[in-house]
Structure formats: C-alpha cells, structure tokens
Length: 70
Image (cartoon, rainbow, N blue to C red; front, side, top):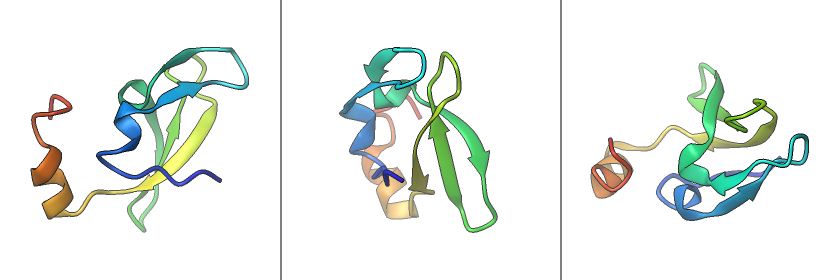
C-alpha cells in the first residue's frame, strides 16, 4: 500500500493501473476517510485505489496552504 505524503504527492505523476488515467497527485480523489485520519486516495476517473495518506498536521497544512488551492 503506497503511503502518500501531504505536500509531496500532489506534485507527483500517477498512472491508474485499472483505467490508464495519468495525471498529478493533486487530481486524486479521496475515496475513504477512516477514524484514524487515514485517507484512501483514488483515481479521479474510476476511483481505483492509488494510495493512502495521513491527514496533514496543522503545520503541514499551513506550509502548503494556497499552493494546492486550499
């Protein structure tokens, strides 16, 4: 299971193994949020699982706020 790092994965290139979509991590969709604040991220076209990330800390969010349209 790939672990995606907030503020990093948004700039990375991804290719969906199911439908072939290609794009930047910023385009991935949240497909599941767990009580532990882990978010599964998926392909924006077919919602195939692409990895998970921990919800960002306040410091991480503040560091990257605005850079990704937050």
